[in-house]
Image (cartoon, rainbow, N blue to C red; front, side, top):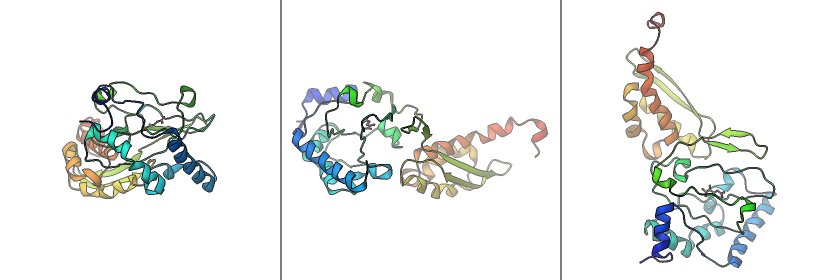
Length: 252
Ligand SMILES: O=C(O)CCC(=O)C(=O)O
């Protein structure tokens, strides 16, 4: 028996990958939360930016209260059951006349999660008409599993930055075994991302040909990052690339 949604709303969600609107509190309560956000912005001298936009329930007591709001949790529970972990809370504040936008993405892929066993409760602090840049959905795209993303972020001036960028430097012996390997954090969205590079030297001694399997078992879970792991797995092509070297380079 659903707690807040109807059975039809739950099946709409499962079919489309989203469902709205769900009334979780009256407009006056949404306004009260917005007042607290705006008071915070005044104290900071401008909109929340950078890391302050993410995991806000760890920064502000009122955001923590919102993340634990019984009616929001009831709607979430109706879809994924009572075992709920809050992965993050984020503000997407749409300032008037800002040309910036959030590009198409699947949340699980964007967050670097390995499965799509995740749900987002999008809570409006104000009306969300089309003119204000309301969110668009691609119905059914959640059934296509995790799709490839161009990980970029557009600045207000229209310039685009790459997200989730690491570089990897490695030395291999003639048999393709890793003698040394280092990952360097470059452009990354979350403060935790660079920590994933610390475990990469644990791959020393592995054969690059085996990395397709060994990366997951060595750098799984919180020891790694799915974006970095994908890059490391691509090193399994090294033996095939070496075999393609022209003969005059083969003995170098
Ligand atoms: O509010 C938006 O336009 C985007 C929100 C979003 O990307 C999300 O909730 O994951």
